[in-house]
Length: 265
Image (tube, rainbow, N blue to C red; front, side, top):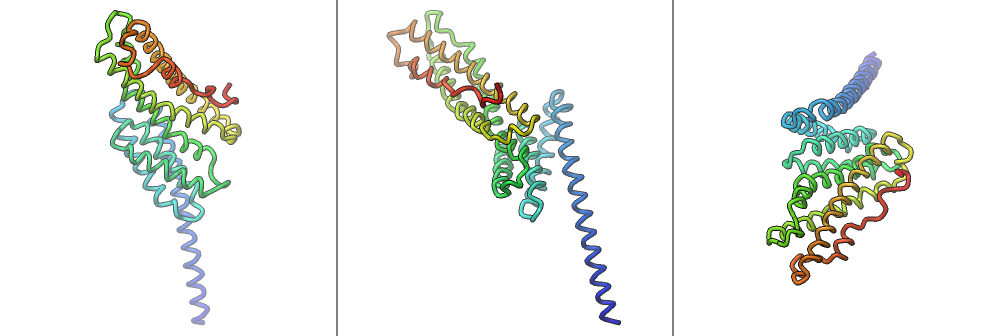
């Protein structure tokens, strides 16, 4: 009788434990959906109207998502949930616009990408592809915002008979910023060679739209830079070495292999 009772108790405990695990899984799945929906709400409804509030809320959301991902990443069978949380965290850190969370952004993207590689064919394609894109997109956006290249180039005029030290220094600043941006654009294009993009219409459209914007930003900025170098050479032939870049070098800086993968055309 005692043995039977023990068996019943053990069986009941196992059932209860199984029930607890199932409940926890349901709660986590619900939280993941809620967190993803909140990310969308903040990006669509809050950020366009109140950047300061969005920065605070997106950072908080990112911290939560990263914490959940870190807790799940080593649990068997939870890799996809962890990857989804990392994708949310990386996106929220990026769109928060805060320089204080750059390390967290990289950590989230790197951890998620590593987990994608470990998961092999079981990895969720769209989340994993986005995790690979977020760093170059974020870097390119920061390059544009932090350097203000369009504003700098607009102030430079080598056709007015004068080339000031400030203008020459500004040209060197633009050159350095373009040198940082070019590998990011090339990275975006290389990611586009992943055939899995072809199987997801929404991801393909997202990629193509943003790859086109990335190329447009770089090519237009580099194009103006080339024009300024050409104007300097034409108007100040006796000062050719001062600019630190030849017209041929400027054209090479601008040159990027055909703008994006074939399926975007």
